[in-house]
Length: 248
Image 1 (cartoon, rainbow, N blue to C red):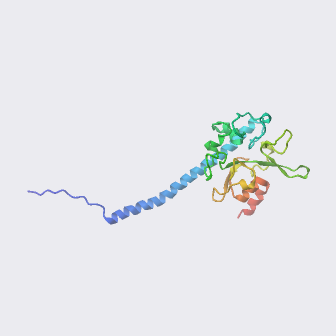
Image 2 (cartoon, rainbow, N blue to C red; image 1 turned 60 degrees about the vertical axis):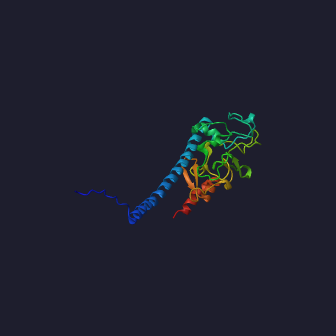
Image 3 (spheres, rainbow, N blue to C red; image 1 turned 90 degrees about the vertical axis):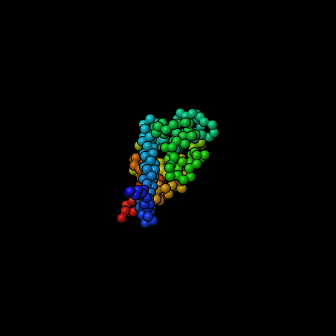
């Protein structure tokens, strides 16, 4: 009579198990950094796309507003404003995020909360706090032209101050056609501060390996270090010489 028996299955040996673990570890070491780079690239691409959309929105805004670029904020008394808006409680004023919202397909929701729209929030801004909605890490350039008349050297501010009165020529909108050096002067860029850049100290160049992202008035998106960004802000005509001096 033939004997019958059930063959027993052989488990993994220690060497086989260690080999499998080693292969998994190698694959993880290869794939995880690649996935992180893909995510980082996607985040940067999303931000770059938003910056380009700001430029396109401002071009459309200018077409509807006699050729003027959008202002940072309009703090004039209500009876002096030319921009229609819905009054909100508190010290709310029409600002650029609200003024461009309709051209970006973003919900307007009133000027006081338009900062909360995702398109305005810099995904690299580590200090973002929804309770401080005006601190988005994205700022509009408030210095677009100088007043050199009568020996003075003052900046026209691309906004209306609360103290503005009819006839005041030191603040207000600027014609897109009057903006000099559009290939070097930035329109919107990374900021440490609020929704505007009114001084070099507001410029943030820490988010992209020692550089900041900026969209220029010619529509191009660039990465500037601190020196380049400050020149773009204060003296964009000097950027060409700076870039040539930095070339290898």
